[in-house]
Image 1 (cartoon, rainbow, N blue to C red):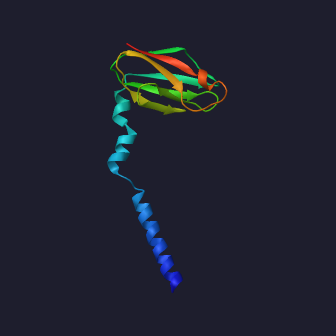
Image 2: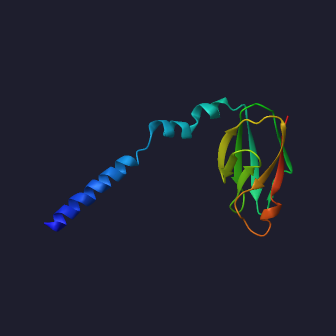
Image 3: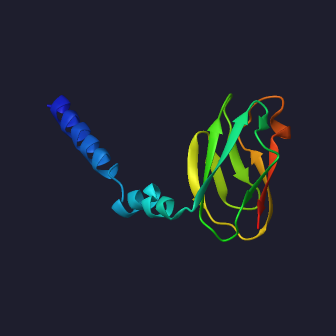
Length: 125
């Protein structure tokens, strides 16, 4: 009898857990960002390899949605635009819009001995 009750309670807990995993439909819609990507006027690709970026400086227009893509050519890397709440992990994209200024971009995944030198510039004008 105790095994039967334990089985029913376990099954009930499993069903409740799975139904909670469905999440909020609005949250799923916000994470997909289809309208933002469609609104991006251009794409900037930053290529990262151990322990450098492919360019010392990238340029984008101010106040314009840009699709920023990080491609890892070797190693595991991510980027962070310092002073902004923008972080992208390897081989992913995000649509960003920034005001005019010069920003540091740094690798935000500890990637080895040269990690501290993985810094480049983003010029927004």
